[in-house]
Structures are given as C-alpha cells and as structure tokens.
Image (tube, rainbow, N blue to C red):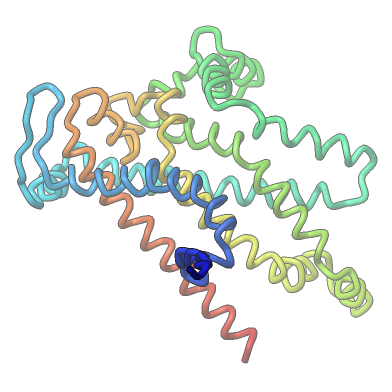
Length: 313
C-alpha cells in the first residue's frame, strides 16, 4: 500500500488593488479626512443652497414646494431692499478694498524706510488686525456714540464739528462709518503683504534709476509699483471676495440700518434667513452672490493667464 503525500493547498489569489491605489494608498488615506470635511461642510451646503433656491421654504410654516426661478424673479423685481442692497454692496466693497489698499500701501512704503524703531512700528501696525471682530465693533460703537463717544468729543473740541454726530445712526453717514471702521481693521493685512513684496524689489534698479536722475516718485511709479502688480492683484481679488461676503462687521455695527441705509446683500441674506425665516429667498440671494463672485474669480484667472502669456512671449 503506497504512501500518499498530501499536496499543499493552493493559496487564495491575492487581492490586487489598482496601481495608483497600491502605490499611493497611504497618501489617499491621509487625504480622506480633508476630503470628507470638504464634502460635508462645503460641497453639501452649496448643493443644498442651490436646491433651496428653487423651493418655497419658510421655517414658520411646514412643508416645501418647487417654484423654479420664482425666488430669483421676486428678488430682481424688489426695488425696496434688493437693488439698494446691491448698490450698498458695491459701495461697501469698493470703498473698503480701495481704502485698505491705499492705506496699506502707504504704511508699507513708510515701514520700508530706514526709520529708527522700525521693528516696533511694524509690530504696532498689526494691532487692528489682531483685534477680534466683536471687540473691534463694540469699541467703535462706543467711540462713535453721539452722547459720550470719545470720537465726537475730540472732533468737537478740535473745532471740526459744531455738535456730535450719530455716525452709525444717520442715513447719510452709517455706510461710510462702517467702511471707515472696516478699513481701519483690515489695512494691516495689506501692509505686511505689500511690505514683504517691497523688500523683494531689486535695489540695483532703484539705485540705477536714482543715478540716472529719476525722482523718488518716478522710481516708485516706474519700478516699485510694477513689481507689486501681481501681489496687489491677488490681494484685491481676495479681499473683494472677503468684503463682499462680510456680514458680521456690518451687523455688529448697524445691523444694516438705519432704515436699511447700510444693508448689503450679505446682511440681507442673514436677515431673511434668521430674522424672517424666508429660507428659499435667502438661498436665491446667496446663489446670486456666488455667481457674482465666480465672475470676479473668472476675471482674475483671465488676467493671470494674460500676464503669463506676456511673460512667455
């Protein structure tokens, strides 16, 4: 009787993963939490906003109904709130970004000079940017108070005002006062960014221009500013998006008042969503704001592409 030798069992075929997953599996694993957060906190709310914009949803009454573009037509036909808010948003954005850039550029040029105590001044200029928005808004509300605000007291004593002005409560000054406070808080970001760009300007070009007899203004206009063009464009586009979407600063200062004199699209969205609970109309306004900001981003991309083409040619 022959001896039978047991054959080894065949091993199960190994599971073959796709080559990119097999080679970069750990990379995908580490990126997965960020992707999930992006989907949960950005993509899903965005899709939900688009869906709500074509519904009739109000938190006061239950249920919803598909209405298509009716919410958009309602907003575009609103001459009382929507179109004034569009104008205020443009004034708020252009005034804030323009003031921040000019003040930040001026401060950066001064801090780039060989001044005594320059390091201290560079540290002090950052203080408005480091102050939390709530504290800054509450402080400026106190400063601009007509009865006991230190700002009115100083202006009256200096002879610049005959009597105190209710800066945040007057129809003609509310929006301008909020722009002023926003410029005060945000210009340090421009200052430190433009200061870094100024330090990268080749000193050899400035020295050669000075030897050739160019004045300080000519050196700044013809050499320094062209080197700041790329940084300036990125700063402006970034702050246009931030400022256009800003709701907390205006809301803390004026709540869009008085009589909607400082109401922007962002504050109007907040008012509709959390005060009157008109969720679908707030979503429609949000979609309009997204489209406008996408146009701004598209314009920035086109300008950037043209600059690259000029460099290569």
